[in-house]
Length: 85
Image 1 (cartoon, rainbow, N blue to C red):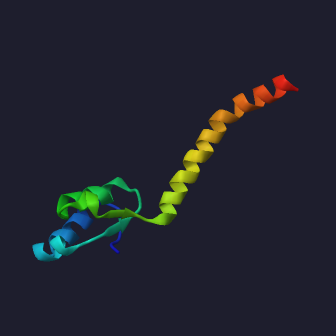
Image 2: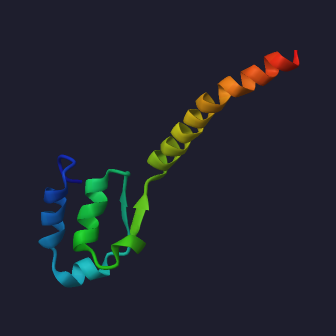
Image 3: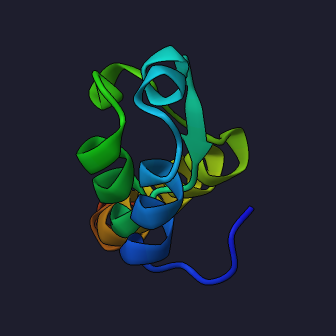
């Protein structure tokens, strides 16, 4: 783990690794913070096939999307419910 959440320190950390080590990396796990995926894409060969988003942040994003959809749809459901009563 590196301090901070900026792209540059992560890029520098990966670039200090020998190319053979970067080539041998199979997976990189992270949250959805775009600078992290950008740093990996800039320094790790075939990065788009090696990034794994952690389960906590994946479930959190899915729950937030469901909640947003529910809140958008709830008024129309309530109107239909009142109209049918």
